[in-house]
Length: 123
Image (tube, rainbow, N blue to C red; front, side):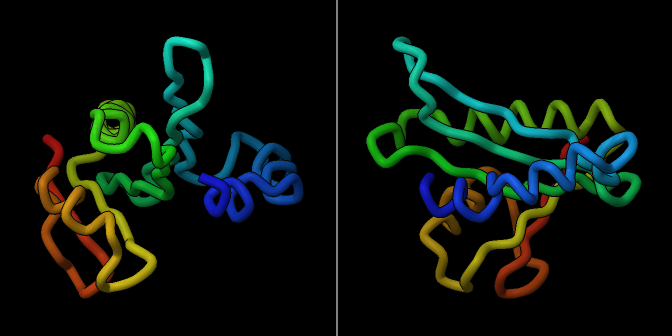
């Protein structure tokens, strides 16, 4: 979560995204998951940068909340949002070929386009 926040939630980046008239092209924003006490346990960001193609830009789940359905719920919500904007396919790019998130995305039906890029049909 800290790595994601430091990279994706830096104030200059947020300011730049807010100042783009109509938002960044294809940007659908952030989805946040909280626990019963209201603490953030996960976040996902995505968009539809190319007509018909959704993209998961970021997904992070707090260590203590992993393997409890938080990531799946966030990807599902992001997917539903992307579908409503015309996405028929969805892509994700992992930071490394042997990224620990690979089994998670494979279980959700993503298949390789390249060693780090994965795709699935969402219609």
